[in-house]
Image 1 (cartoon, helix red, strand yellow):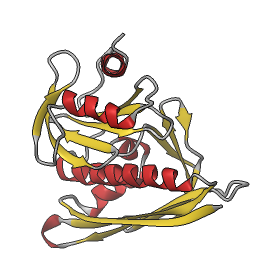
Image 2 (cartoon, helix red, strand yellow):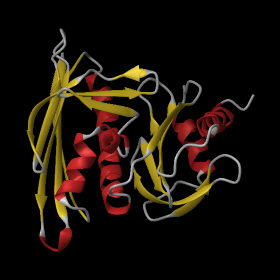
Image 3 (cartoon, helix red, strand yellow):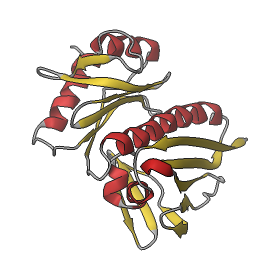
Length: 242
């Protein structure tokens, strides 16, 4: 048993079509809004999310700066994921960007995986919009850290929400994190993710399908040597105080 899917998302952003193209078609651009670290070379998009590598995604159509499509090969079980981006310039310097994610999820647990994928893609697209509206042209350094294993997700979200000053809503200004913390504005929240934009960074937390709370942050002023370690320790203290 399995399930085919298609998830369209669309937004108008205050960036040029060329800036949108740079964000979706280059490794540094994709690093600045998607997950982990990405390399684009020889027509193949390769992404590493912490210690995990996504299947390579082959570019099938590229018409800069208006359309880009790439997708993974079908696995023996039929699994694949494909992405299509359509870019349309508008008056007064704005651009409409449409992202359609489609594919096939195999197995009896496809519904749980589809829910996790859908909520994650909502956050990643919201991050792309936030990036293009506030950081277009800049390059982020991504950090990806995992909490200890989570067994009780409602309780895990209660702990994270408490650390964020209460269940956050888009538009809320909050302070959180290791040391003196960071301050930012919540730009995205759904049942499995939350995203916060600060002056020089984007901070995101998501419910990992593998059973960990994940900090997937984007730093636009470079990475301090121990910054990843500090976020890892913050997650450990949050979910494993002993």
